[in-house]
Length: 230
Image: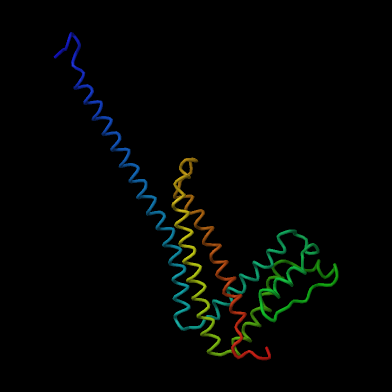
């Protein structure tokens, strides 16, 4: 059929329109599939973290005592404190032992360390041996507090552990959610949002665990139940 000698373009226009609609629908479905796929990956990351935290809570609640948990945390805190001083130089004679001593005294009640007096004494230090020395000092003090405080100390320490874990885990969940909302912008920079979410989430979870250790150890070393004369 023609109009004024021109073939009717309506069937061709309709086919083009239907093809455009079909292509658009496929793109929408593809985008929705990618979004659902990424959501599953996001959930996998968070579920792995959740299992670790819940396993830790189960250990605390099991009634088997918190001594092993605390001594592991003490070791991690000692390592972190020493690293903050030794990271500036690989030469022990350049380490700020004064700052190290002050940080120990600030973080832990009634604990002080003897600083090396001479350059030769400083040179004999190694980072790992320094970590072990400080860890041993803190663990011995903690065991003495535990022995003197008895069951009351144990219950108080368990309560502190749970409160710290729950508070920081809640903050972490909020931070992960905020990060997830903004992670879609990564695709504009040719980065896979799911990969970036896993990468950033892992770093955030490591910071969470360091903060849990730091806060728990600090608060538990402030327990004074039955510790007169310590």
